[in-house]
Length: 123
Image (cartoon, rainbow, N blue to C red; front, side, top):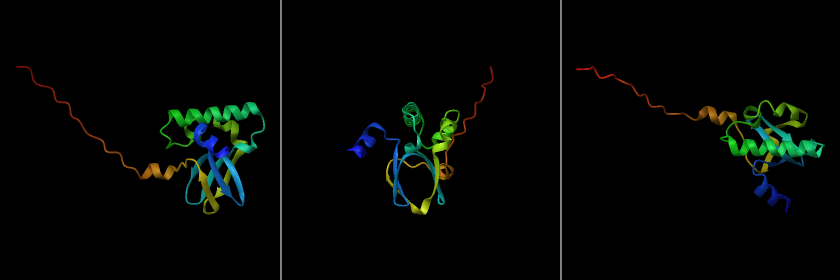
């Protein structure tokens, strides 16, 4: 039931298994060595939990989802630095949710067209 609620209401939330424990939160970045996650369970106040979910929804709806939430909402996320966890990627198992990888952005190439404007001489 909880998993279904996360999938429908909060698609930006990831469910992660690490070291025999499950963590719920937003993945900041995952590379070949380290996975960084904002652990939702470490947020104590209901007001802060609600604010965290609002920021996650803003990130999910307004960004291209390739940028980490820390870059997209860089003025708001330092408030939640206390719940940021770094995990060894080889021991992380993503059970549900999106994964952000800054390295993937670097590998994509953008094709740009060059347009040259020429003035017609007056006759």
